[in-house]
Image (cartoon, rainbow, N blue to C red; front, side, top):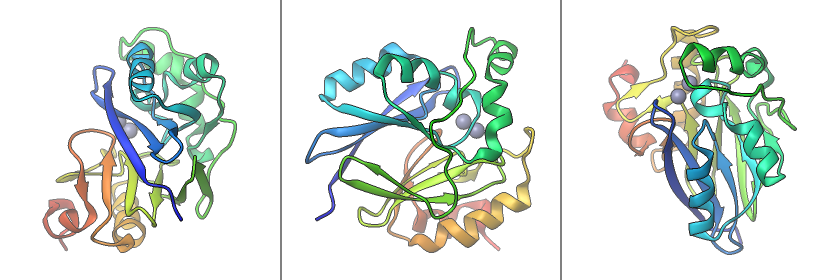
Length: 214
Ligand SMILES: [Zn+2]
Ligand SMILES: [Zn+2]
């Protein structure tokens, strides 16, 4: 009997990144996905929901998603899983990137576990499969629960848009191919939380997202 996922979005950083607290409703065991910053607000959300966080998950290495991960790991005493190793250069350079964007001090991140296509990640009783979806960044991953029909997609695809590909390692054709070949085939009924903006479903994006219409 698979667990039932619950999720709360905590917008963080000046980029309004959708840091997401996800948990198994049966056990209240959860994970923080993409703690880009504003750690006190993330910890307040954890307390408010009464969730026991067992890990931090990263969809990719960009500063708005990962800059708070190392400090949160220390505060909570939990491991970091993800992204794909191809984003190591981004995680290594988080202090410089954060300074360039005026975000203040940030630490580099060395995950406890890199993720790759076909890997499995658990959060309490919830199971997620990993898709490696490069293009927005080389090491972007998507977390999908096929049982719960739910995905965390980072900056791969948004409601009505797709990830920008003008940053180091970006490639628009590669991104569109990953979305069409790996993400959309998961099924129209998959609901997803993106890294920015409102939630959507893969079916809605398949028929109406202007970047996916040919
Ligand atoms: Zn990004
Ligand atoms: Zn982002």
